Length: 166
Image (cartoon, rainbow, N blue to C red; front, top):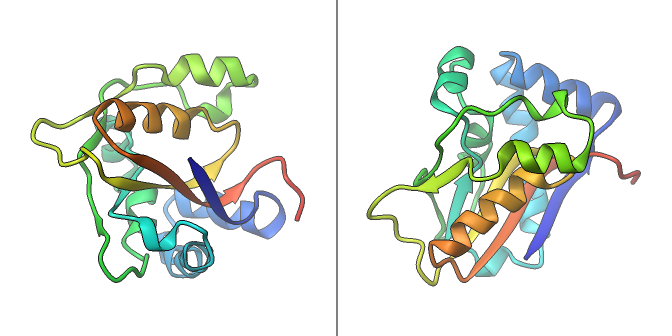
């Protein structure tokens, strides 16, 4: 429904995010400050019920050792919203950076997400948390899955957006 971002994906921010994904988890402190500042300044800050980190497939999370989106979500400061991991990736997809077109990225993540039984998404206002938005395919597919599960609104919060200057 709306998105907030910490910055543009390029230069030192891009280098920081890539290093964070490749094991430099201490960078979560810096990126956490950035993404929390974007949250605090967002138009939807006061309307959020839950933070949902964009999930990794279990095999990718196991290989990496962590989900960078979950680490970022845990850095967010909000008076009432909690972090929830009831959105799951149910099939392993190709890494999105390996795909060059928006349609290829959308097809790659189509039907890749589901919600756990007993989730509490009905009529909730959810904020998806991720590191980077490129074409929006992953965030859109997650939002679609959450809305099908009854979410009233789905916002997105990312550290960076690719393809935008300033």
